[in-house]
Image (tube, rainbow, N blue to C red; front, side):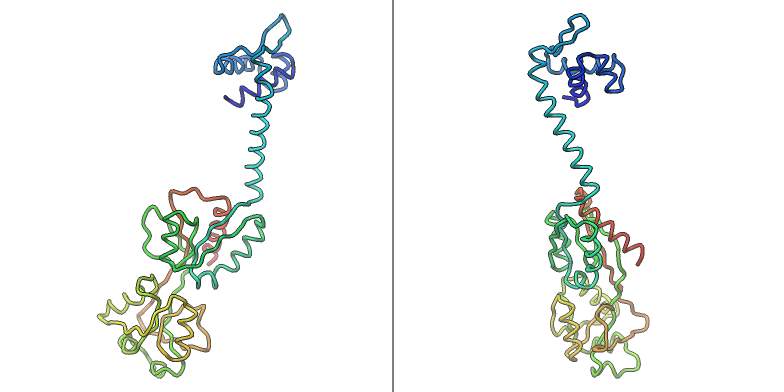
Length: 291
């Protein structure tokens, strides 16, 4: 049943006539008559009897009236709920992120999000970037904020931060004594890196492979803070983001070599994001434009 036709039906019943109903609805009388005719046709029942100038409900009309009022009331309630949803975002934001990105990039954004949308619940899952991609693909989460790797449809990714890696060693590491380091110099010493299947490991390994050099990997762990600790005590070199660089480690500039890493968000191109997810993606895009 069409809501406009139901609205006209209730108005005629309440006003006691077509002319009064038309005036209350800001319509012409023929328009109201047409809506009633369409409703009667769809229900295959006569709803009003015209007794001279008087309009009275038929038995079918009396049966329909309370149900029509209920349908219209529920429709108005749904409209208000959707309007409230636009104005006051609730629901749940399901988000996957890597430990490093979650600890070093998201706190300020999450603070802004929760301040703007206090009714929204957060479901944050910490995992490797590659797992986060898969979580979005499988529909387990709406948004992933991770190291960006190759992205194919139906996934869609967007850059938020450039996050280049720097070769780093402990200040007393043998490499730290070199006035200039080359990739060959670095490859002669063991490294500590994330697992080989991670985007970050591939960035580093491919940089050496292009020069015909192989890596000596002493150990792997996907926690960048642990990698930084291993570097700081002199056990190995690694490639660290600038957020982890401090006096505990020494940067090794290598002329002509850049380890470009990109951080951003990933969503499923075929999924309609919740209002909470749309709002969070909006904050990420604002961050990207200001970075």
